[in-house]
Image (cartoon, rainbow, N blue to C red; front, top):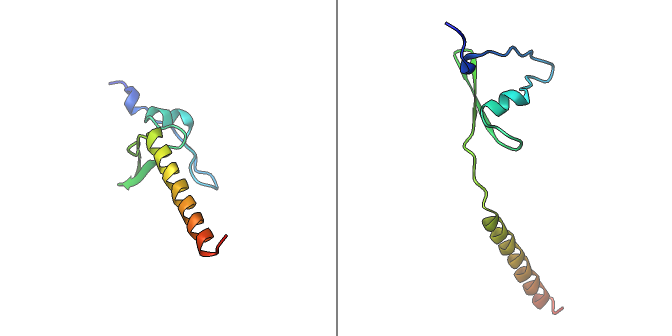
Amino acid sequence: MGTSEKEKKVILKVGKKGLFLPKKLLKKIGASNGDSISVKVNNRKLVIELSQKVKTNSNNKKKRQKSIIDDLEKISEEEQEYFNL
């Protein structure tokens, strides 16, 4: 019985700073720059999984940014009124 693609092992060395996971391995689980992964220990084995990706909606981000700007403008106006500026 041969080893399937899913069963292939890669031997990594633990260095002074810990364990480095090659980009090739991370791509196999669908991870990309900025993603979160979860790591758990199961019977002396490390299980590494891609955390659920959160879809970012640029419209929601823009709405949050506008809301923050609006809040800052309101605070500024209140402070100017309070100090008679």
